[in-house]
Length: 406
Ligand SMILES: [Mn+2]
Image (cartoon, rainbow, N blue to C red; front, side):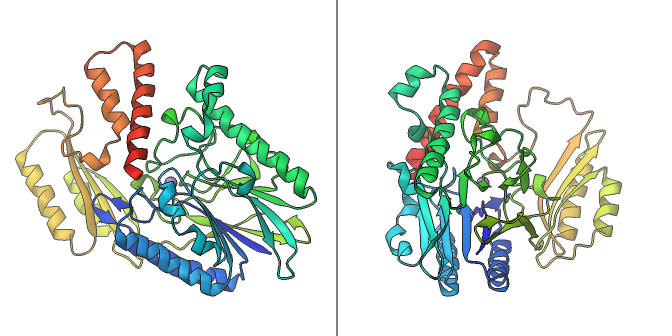
């Protein structure tokens, strides 16, 4: 049996007003071919299917179109919800997808045992168990008892996640002790290398779990949430597949990939990393006007899709002429590639030292928590009080976004 692990598709993601749909479509085409060539039996998608809780109609369409192609391939699929996904939205077509061999676990199950999925071979024998754990929300993890037990919210969350996996491991051992098992998850593990496109998952990511919370019962842990492909805690069998495409400029040098697992006579072989072709380059060019001109003239991208370029001009003295030149550069190259962001910084500029954000910053570039932090700084809030306020703010923010999702 062959298994493929992916995550963080973020269908509908927009990067500085540019949609990333074209590369995602190319990725889906490539993935279908890979599933065929490698003769994959099971596809695991560990959360963040959509970028937004309420995705646009065309983004939902892309998702269903891709699922229909999977159905034609007759492979088994397990999809779990991530922190970006709305539980209800993912679960809505659950019953119909169930009958088509696609299991969706949008949110944590009330009866935790239902998260254990039996994978059968052609003879109908159970060959593998998958603990399909979605992103665990605050309400899944906290109760009156845990709040009394753990005064600290972060600790309560961390312990809640640990308990959830420990319970599944015990059930798995009890019921299927001889079978190999895989756990899925959408969470932040301590030591993971992040990029700029993940959203804080719990209390400013302070509730990161240790990689040792995953019992040895699980032969492999298929994680989502972190967009850089990586192994956790030097354990080859606990991995983030990473997102299939770069979702922010900070991921421009990532080599995106998937993980291929093979189950041979009840044993999981070493995970194999399969590189995903790059469909578009994301390029950041910075320097003074002269060097920017040179670098742009020399830049020859060779990918299928037009490159996304971010320009950062750094000049010493403020000059309106410089700003005009930047506009001219942008216009000149806009046929060859898409310039997403052009920013000019004058190092000697003292016109507005109190400015909270760089000139031209767009609301989409700002994280609510950063705005809040700067506001606290501006209002000279005492450091001790800041932590408390920050936690309260995040809690309110989570509530607001969850209600948004309904
Ligand atoms: Mn994600």
